[in-house]
Structure formats: C-alpha cells, structure tokens
Image (spheres, rainbow, N blue to C red):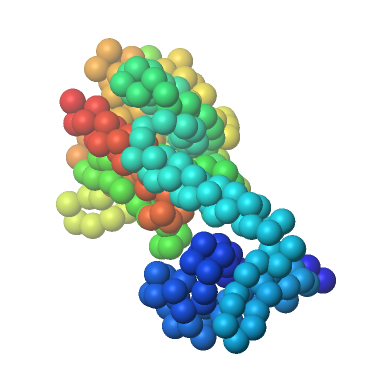
Length: 298
C-alpha cells in the first residue's frame, strides 16, 4: 500500500537539509526540535529509506537524501506555484463560466446580455446550458444557474436578480376575440391553457394572488411542451393562454402581440442566480450578478 507523504514533512526535510540541524530548522519554522525530528522520521518511513546520517554531534544528508532533496524542493515549488495560480484565479475575471438558464429567458433576454458581459471581460469563456428542468447544481459541472420562483432545496445559495417579479397571464388578441377574455381565474377551466413541463412535473396548477387571498386553478389544454419558449410562441400564434414570468412575456406585451389578463393577480416568481455553495461565488460569478442586476433594472 502506498504511504501518504505530508507536505509539512517535506518542508521540514528541506529546511533541515539547508540548516544542517533539527534544532535550527525547528527555530526557523517555529516548531519544536522533537516535532522537526518526528516529521523527518515520518517522511523516511513513507519513502522506506534514511534521508540523514545522524550521530550525537553531526547531521548530514545520506546518499538517498542527496538524491531526493532536489525533488522535494521541486514539489514544494510546484505547490507554491499552484497556490499562486489559484490566488490569481480568484481575483481575475478569466477562465470558464458555466451557466444554466430557462429556455425563454435564456434565448430572448440573457443571450444579448451575455454578449455585452463578455465584451467587458474578453478573457472569460461562457458555457451556457438552456433547459427548463431543475438542473442538479451539486452533481452537474455548473458554476451557477438562473431560476424563477422559490427554491425547493434550501441548501443552495440564492442571490436575487429581480425580487418583485410576477407571472403574467396572457393571450393573443386574436384568441381573446374568438373565445372571449376570462373574467376570473376559475373561468380558465373553459379555456385552452398552454402548459409546460418543469422537470417531471407539468405546470398546470396556476396560482393567483387575489385581494381576498390566493386561489389555485387546475388548468387543461391541447398543447404541452418541455420548452417554455415554444409555449410562449404558441400563445403569440393565438393557440391559447400562457402563464409565465412577466419578464419573458414583456416584449410581446409591449409590442401588442399578447394582452395581459388580471395584471395585478400574478403569482410571485422572483428571478435568482443560484449556486451550489458560497465557495463557487468566484469573481466572475460575482461580477455576473452585479451585471445582471443592472440590466434587469434598466
């Protein structure tokens, strides 16, 4: 079985070889002589050879110690260089940024924002996954995800982008002219409601916040997709009523392609940047957070 060598033991060995004694090396490293001697003995056991020739008065490197010393120095230098590279990486906006975003928001809104973000930081490489499923941030190689709504997993780190965002209930003017405009949430049961999947669940329990309290309506319709962008396109084409983030639908609302129904009753759907752990809040992720908050507010 391979024995594990400790980095501190390597450091004591190199310092002892330079100092010529355990006591002097120990003082230089702020250790006790006994600890320094024990560290070298541990390293010798791991290597299976004697590194020093010892007697009561003198200490010198053995033949094996002479051969091993430059490799020990190289190992310590490599470790120091690696720590320096990590320190630079923590402070530099460069490298790879791996993101996941919902389909509609990712394609229509996030893509041009990311173009501008990369122009600011040209050494940054962005990997974007567009998906309407709840990606596992712990298991998948992602730095962050952009999500709507409250998180089911409380262990994740959620950083708000737009805290007061709501869902919007919308339909094309042509659909409303043909089938009429619902006058209450319960009336949606008589309409063709366009639904989408979120993970393995169909989003068909539509909740509204009315003046007298919350109301949930189980809706139905003839079209369902795992791509929320496609569901929005169906709504614009007059195929039914859609209920999703107002941010996704806003360009169509402003252009008159969609009409907003019950604008004050929409369910809260805050937009958030989500990470698996605070250690993943690298400078790149933190700068992206600031950038997206600025863009979402404008």
